Amino acid sequence: MLLQKLLVGFQTLTFGNVVMFLIGAFLIYLAIKKEYEPMLLLPIGFGAILTNIPVVEGIPGIADPHHGVLGILFNATILTELLPAFIFIAVGAMIDFSPLLRMPSMLFFGAAAQFGIFFTLLAALLLGFPLKEAASIGIIGAADGPTSIFVASRFAQNLLGPISVAAYSYMALVPVIQPPVIRALTTKEERRIRMDYHEVKISKTVKILFPICITILAGIIAPISVTLVGLLMFGNLIRECGVLDRLSQTAQNELANLVTLLLGITIGSTMQAHAFLKVETMMIIGMGLVAFVFDTAGGVLFAKTLNLFVKEKYNPMVGAAGISAFPMSARVIQKMAQKEDPTNFILMQAVGANVAGQIGSIIAGSVVLALLS
Amino acid sequence: MNFELIPEGLEIMGYGMGTTFTILILFYFMIKGLLKFFPYKED
Image (cartoon, rainbow over all chains, first blue to last red; front, side):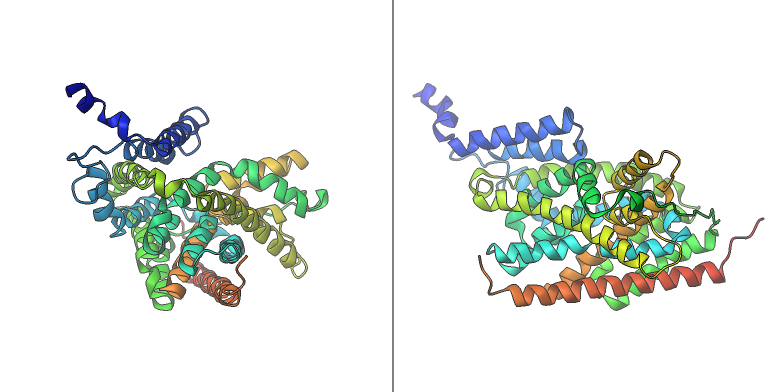
């Protein structure tokens, strides 16, 4: 009888639980061995293992919405959008917008490279997902984990696990995904285009006014963007004002670390076998790739189109850096440019486009929220 | 394959890309204005 009580966990263990242990372990492997977004993939992986430990009658599971630690955390911080919102303060405090302020035209690439979001939304609709779920899947193309989580937590809480895993995994895979797409859409000559870089000094007033004006402008045009843009810009204002170094450091380190720690494991706790082991999960993972491919294509093709009308040509590869995966994408572009011509240096332009992509992805996420709310 | 929602999806795509571009173009002019009115000055 006592032995039976001790072995009750084994009796309630399902095949699905075991598969989820393996998936959790695989995410932890990717985080540790391959260093793919370890800050998120490791807690998500471990959360997936925790939530699939069999629940014994009378003892609440860790993901129980009323009595389990992770369930309570999910209700209090994800459903209320608190944690995804807090992370924007941290991200804002980490971003230096100077490269974008020096080359504001990079903003156009930040817009064009959001094409993957809307293309993937269409693809998800075609595959039979309801509109709001399709939009949440499309937002994987924001190449911005917090935005994906924020939109999914509002529109498709049931898909939060696979969407987060896809978003963070593909962000880590940008060096693998982008080069073949760029090579397929550009000629060797285009990849060798040089771009002038003027080291313009930016006044402190501009750096301070930038986050304030962006917040007001975005807030007036798309009021729903206030949470995302407003908190991002609040973090940036703390960074740039010059009198709140302690708060800026706290936002960049303690806040970012604490939020990331709780966010990952809480999202992992949504990956229960019955909810995760579905054909839809595989579809979402596949569509995440589609989103990143079409983001890249959107940026490159827009740059090529612009080149038809401008005197000083853009290297089309810079358009691909308009996705939000910062700073990975900019580094990939610079590496590709130097491979074609070792003396070509377009890193600063690519960083500008990459920072623009961060704003673009948040704006696109807000627009999707506004259109479907 | 479900084609029923495609017209709505295309509409969201049009509005979505259009609005994103419009907002970022406004940001472009805002930055240009800020740089013009508050240029960097050596101390």
